[in-house]
Length: 206
Length: 91
Image (tube, rainbow over all chains, first blue to last red; front, side, top):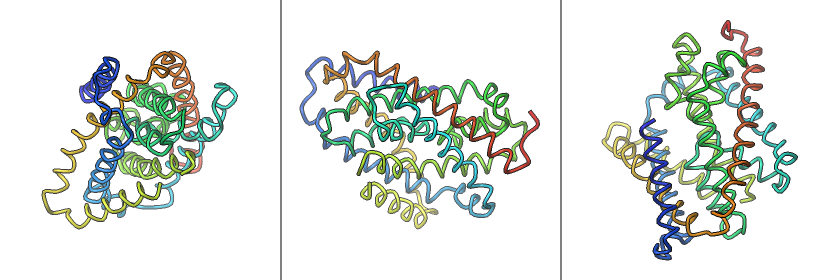
């Protein structure tokens, strides 16, 4: 939670710096985020490759382990597609790209900004992705009990998206009433983490 | 997309190879610095964009709709998965 607040504070500080008009052009340009994003993805990859979770996941791997992440992807995208009717001015591909963050607000927003590049709606889509995925993560963090009541013990995992393997894991375990969901929650988070760049790449037309 | 996937796969390969070194810990610490830096840079670009700031209310509303749709879809998906996996919790 403290980490989330620090991250939101950094975003707010960036917006404030941008509003002053004093930010140099290299800071507001397109190249710098691309380089930092590449570094972030490489670091995420190192973390994935080196983690014990990856080995544990391989050991306890079964078809059932993949079912929940696949269901989360299908359910999220299916419902996100309805955004076309509710938002009016957004295309189906935009709604699907926005839904493809699965709570990974930092990566999804920067990916959309990066892949959309010079498109006129790149910045606004990236902003919506950032806000939508912050809302999803916060909802998963504080609403796990409610989601478990509505959708069963797997619902907090599914709603948490990629956060099921870290930030939301304690509340998931509490609501599932057993640590047996831990491998499933970790596999779910990792599978979705890999899916984010793939799906956003597809829906942003890269 | 392929550039990003390539970087991700390269990172996983490096992580696997360097599992017993200090590199994974350094990468973990690096992520904790990179994410706020990235968001600061992103915020700077967003803050400098007058059209975006003027419409932030509309974007917030759209973000809430997308988030709620995603959550609803995930709950529906979890119910289906629970039925298929068969050993869902007794809530």
